[in-house]
Image (cartoon, rainbow, N blue to C red; front, side, top):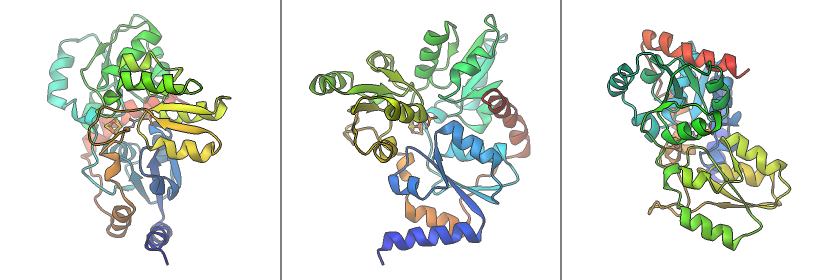
Length: 311
Ligand code: 13P
Ligand code: SF4
């Protein structure tokens, strides 16, 4: 038997034995998306984690996603294949620095992108993801002053869509800020029949070129609904796995990146996950997400508000 199939078999056996659910983000490798009980964007995965009846949540994504699952469903054991799977956005906003920043704006409420630490969520009024961000911003009265953290690109995009003037924390996704505008323009020129679509974590010059801007699930839906046959996609390349599966007759071209280590955009944190690590983590039930009760209690409030508003 093919060793990879054997691993898949073992993971499925452990899943049954331990009554576990596997949640995978669209950015992990295709085989890790295929083995999941649920694959989705950040909001969909948080919603699944909140309602699961499994005893153990296995989060195949990055640390802040597993942490969010623990916060909204704290009686479950939450494990992830590699504890080092971080996120440049989450790391960009250390809590002490953020508290100093927040103190400069005492009459502002805080909206935090879900890509942040549990500590940051404890000083947040409402969490959002790229799927529900406009709705979350608009849930505040027009005259409410707002801070948006940690993604300045998404924050800028939201300011332009909603006409707000949110104060932005200076953070960015190291993958989405690497897209090469000139190379994208050349590629669009080469493939005049292709539609260019982008994730709102991209910088403004990239977003200005896009026919459609949205979260991973929104991009996936767009390519399915559009009559076009060819797309240039500016987000982490893992999403192409689902796009190819959903539309085998269409062509998907990953947008070029300036990252010298990889021609397209790969998140090195997401790519720390592997079938082997997934198997080992399920076998030993670690590494496990553990958080102090006070952090869970405080961080839960803005996530619950988000889930309520997103219903
Ligand atoms: P979404 O899947 O919610 O669009 O998030 C993208 C992302 O960068 C996750 O790290
Ligand atoms: Fe973080 Fe960007 Fe990787 Fe998403 S793609 S986990 S935002 S570094």
